[in-house]
Length: 538
Image 1 (cartoon, rainbow, N blue to C red):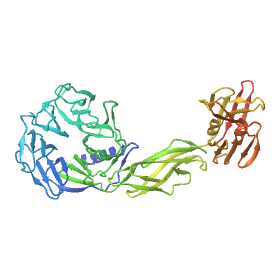
Image 2: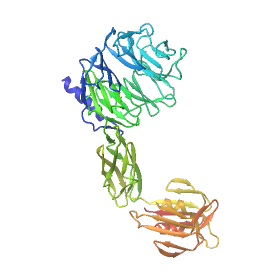
Image 3: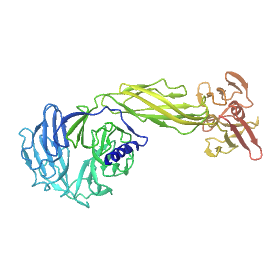
Image 4: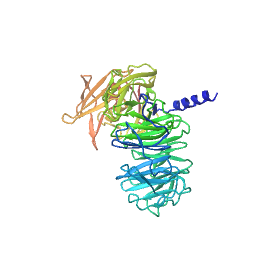
């Protein structure tokens, strides 16, 4: 009975993805090497692989083809961390403390006298400094390659520290079993400040100016300046077992869910098809263009990232669009592989126009939906994206609402106008020309309200107003010249009662009734209140 209850829970979590978290298109990861014990730490430098397990340390000098044990001098074989400064390697263990050594002689030397805790939880190296977290004596730091050490536990409510990271801007973040803490500098008088509480921190990583925090109740992101928030692309409180970043990508391992990749820290994609549900350690390699994953069964997996891989949301949800209107939208594209991505949108429908259909790497496609030819109702429009990193089918989803009249209210000599119930402040107030008795209005406001575009030819002092065909009106092109009483509507001459003028500070004013009726609208004049009401059906 238990077996049948457990599997639905895993799939339920996978389906609780919000719009920006999608299942990826990677094939199943390959087993790079099989160890007899759980893979707890991975260190890669060139062709050198150093793999820690819960029963010893292994080294490969041939790119991972063959591994040999390197345990001489270790009093405990459960490896919790591996890092390196110069030629010196530092290895943390669960029960034997911290060790240093090199692989030339394969001997490890205990550092118990300098870091007095048998249970090391993580090791972090930055230039000449090494930082160690432990579960019994807190946080330890050395700023001189491991010669002099000091403890940095001021302000901590617990000595059970779990993870540490120093960010490029010099910030220091320390994970504990009681939350995340921050310090601006590391020295013997440093005091930590709480920045995230009510969770146990398991791992830390950095990408795009943000610190990512893996905890027992989900993934969080933020920094000291903006605070921390939960990254909710998976519902509930999934356990984050491990995090890693190569500076360009973030990898997140969730217990019982899978492994996700992000190139921007906002959009996450599952990259193992749910085939690895117990990741313990992650190590991306820019040189080898792959992600190495260690699990509790002794498998060292490899996901090949050498080729480009296109990923994006499967759907783009648009708001309701009135019939005859145009609405802009965008689609974010991501390259999860390390090689350059290039592609194009294949034969989009005529009413979906892209600024450019071509894309590359991490890109954004901008498009406009023109509903002039569409009838009211719901739409789900398939788009096919083809690239050297695979193809994707994306659906644009939107509703076209029946067009409703637009009411524009203007008052002579007032800069306040209304479009339906929305209040607008104009650059110039409408006024009545004394010689003709005609009302002139700002050309840009009135034209853009009708969905038209404006062009200005300074040499000939000509204004051209264009509006494409709408659901209820034909295409219109109006040409006017400043100071001239002759205009053109769709290339035909029309005599005006009053010529367009320019008033300070350089605003072009045009005859209201001529423009409004040219766009197929009705104009009403309230002489008592000097108010103009324009009714327009797009």
